[in-house]
Length: 417
Image 1 (cartoon, rainbow, N blue to C red):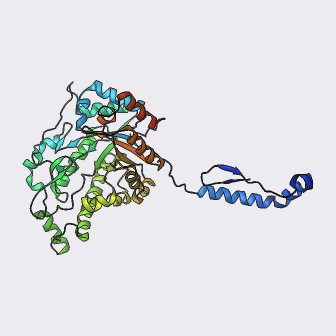
Image 2 (image 1 turned 45 degrees about the vertical axis):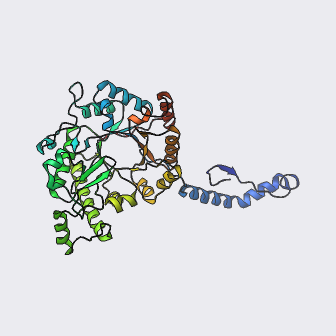
Image 3 (image 1 turned 90 degrees about the vertical axis):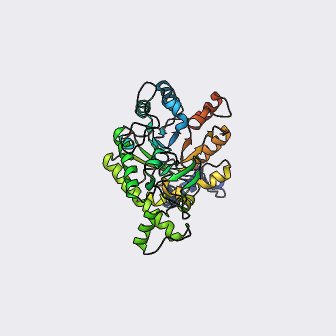
């Protein structure tokens, strides 16, 4: 008979009966087995059922393990050169990556030829590659030939610098704080925020997204923590009038008032539902990916109720940004209940900081964080491509060997058709 211990290692269960061998002999063993055999069969069946229904502390990897990397505008020099793109994609394939997230919307500008942006008086940030080619189309073609997915990344969401053409051409599209100021400080510097409740803003964002989904043979679209609104904003005349009309009250002076937070978060959720429906109507199997901050912060401070998005079945893939150098803090964020909930229904991963130009990250930190994620059944995506091995504290060969050790076998993802 077999039983299972906590680590799922089989061990024999031995019944110690005095004089089993020396005093009773074969006849006793036969009589004993005949008498207790039905009980042994019953115990075996119960054991099998218990094992089959036992949920281990460490979850299994999701159906499609995310092994991704973001390509930012810091990687534009690579993206503009066909040969460099080919080398990058080939290297990622050899290291068993499976997904690339290239930026297509940054600083109020698009990274591809866009009729929608042009109609709003906005020129592309990067129109063509060095050969006059479409850099996004080239990346998609080369990645697909190597078996990698490409999910364009709508990086800045509702955010734009105050000097951008978007702000200058459409100042009424932007929201404000209670004191009338319109900017905040982000990792990208001083920025303004498109009003996510304004119908013209919603139409502009929708048109850009649908244009990209239609124009390119990409595998989906991704929205990050900027598809949101800092909680201090929403005091512009349009939003104040809308809130007053719906609630018969003026917006609370406290931007963190729970009802005021919920009203704005629900409005963003309603827009994301409509955006998802529009994307799926245009390309039903497109991956609708989101990459937010951890939930408590995202909801309370960015009005981004992404857990409700998942429960509404509008998210096909989740990557939670966990840029924490301290391993204990990193693991604590991995263990949040909303992440465990998400990974039961969709491919789920965490964003890991591979380094910045002015702040490189050592391979030992990356290694420990990836292992911690994998042990909990989570995929990973690295921010960002250049820092994987170019802007790094180790030599290129050492860095690449370290990354290769993290993904020892392929984990290809199914392409949409």
